[in-house]
Image 1 (spheres, one colour):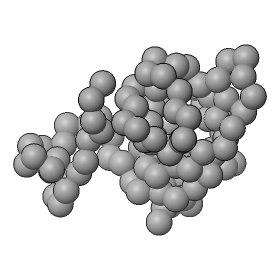
Image 2 (cartoon, helix red, strand yellow; image 1 turned 135 degrees about the vertical axis):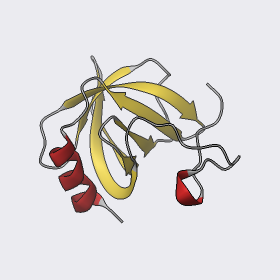
Image 3 (cartoon, one colour; image 1 turned 120 degrees about the horizontal axis):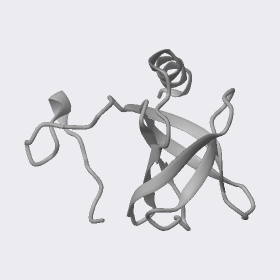
Length: 112
């Protein structure tokens, strides 16, 4: 699935085109626990979060299309699917977006 999207200033992608994501992403710095079906859970470093998904760092990233569950601090498990992998960076989409107030709370709590 190619390279990940990199945003520059004013929510423009590095090639100058507008960012057309469904939800605003916030830089975060947090540990989270992921689990794939039938596998042991593993810890990852999150580096951005939105209502519709998140990105994390992993030396052994799961394949695109993998369903997993993420445990964000203070929340129940959230189901997500891996949508892109770029080296050690993985982008995931929540199966059910977080409520806007929950998203804002988590972005403030985990923000850099």
